[in-house]
Length: 143
Image (cartoon, rainbow, N blue to C red; front, side):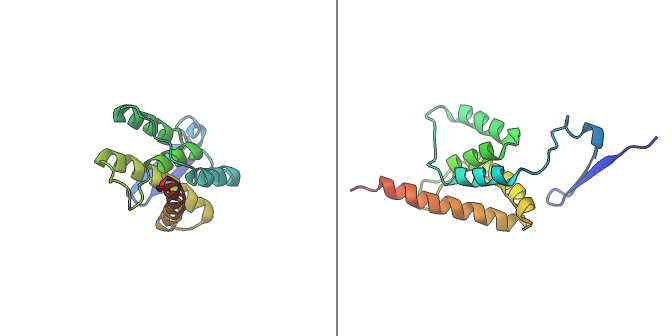
């Protein structure tokens, strides 16, 4: 019997995953996002953060669902909403964990598409967020 497989290596986790090609879609594998989707996700990062006033546990569930959806724009919304500039109050441990997970997921896709390493992609994302925060925080300054 012959079986055709995708072999995925996750260097960071030191893990190798073998997925039969006929099962790829059912296990959630997908192609890299389109350039248009990536641009839309990066544009989302420049928007004004939207923080709902619901309980944290509820928001955390919503954030996790967005991250697990694999949709770049939804992941970018989570990153944007949980980002804290240096001059803003610190995040709780769980907020930071979700932020870092979402940022890492977005950075890995960006890195693959722009053929750079993950830290470079992550720095690009944080730079976009810092610039956006400076603009949005300036709007809040007392007149």
